[in-house]
Image (cartoon, rainbow, N blue to C red; front, top):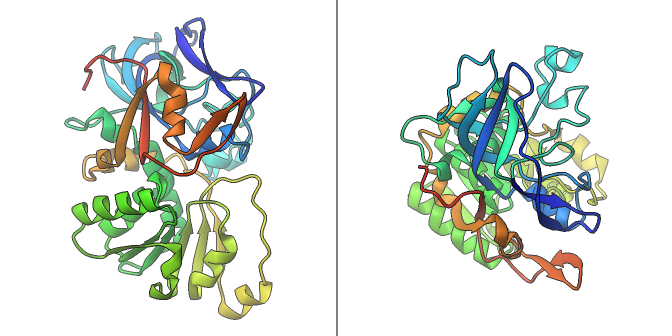
Length: 350
């Protein structure tokens, strides 16, 4: 099969790999239809997050069941499925406490990071990590179920009172999913985005879905942003900024991944204003079926602006401001896409 593999130079290469086999009784072979490009994937290529060289990347995926193990009873060949890429053992103390995202046996289980992922024609997972796509939900909508699960976990961590304002730092796909869910749950939302393309896309998209209750501003218009009870940093390097935006007794949730980010904060600001600083992680096991069910109600497909085949992976990342120059990887000047999807097949499998 074809697969996009991370090499030692932090570049993706399209190579031929052996098709993974159904080895265990609960294994399922999925023919991948498409995979969303996650901010984490982008961070790996620009050196902000680490992944194992030689791994097949990609984890926000959907596809069709191609083969099942002998003990699989809830799925059948031909079923359309969403991949839950946050694998867990289910036996350690973290899992038994309901914190599957902090499973103590994670090494070698991070799909697309240190375990082969879905920028490929096929992937094999146990049946418990696959969910049927609800009837009537397109692949473009279902492919955002994993980011949606992450958002649900982080909004839960904010401990919102219904109707409380949410400030979202970052107008990329994860920030916009965060804004959509918060508004769907009744909160007024302010999205802060510095990139002009993404700010324009965010304004058009969000106001089309929610005619009122959402404001999109640039970092030059901070005078328009009042302090709020909940601030979500979807960028991952905006902690000091988020603290300044939080109202007294408010909560700051660090959601974005950036291993290079460092910041200086004044502990007195946290102490005197009674702030909570929370790192929720990606999502717990129960969040994923909630996200799958919620795909039937939110038009997440509106975030998808571009599709690329596996062969055009560099163009896919270039649309997300990742530059490939003389063997090195870095940043381009700006974005020309919102949510990018890499297709493993060109067939119409909706």
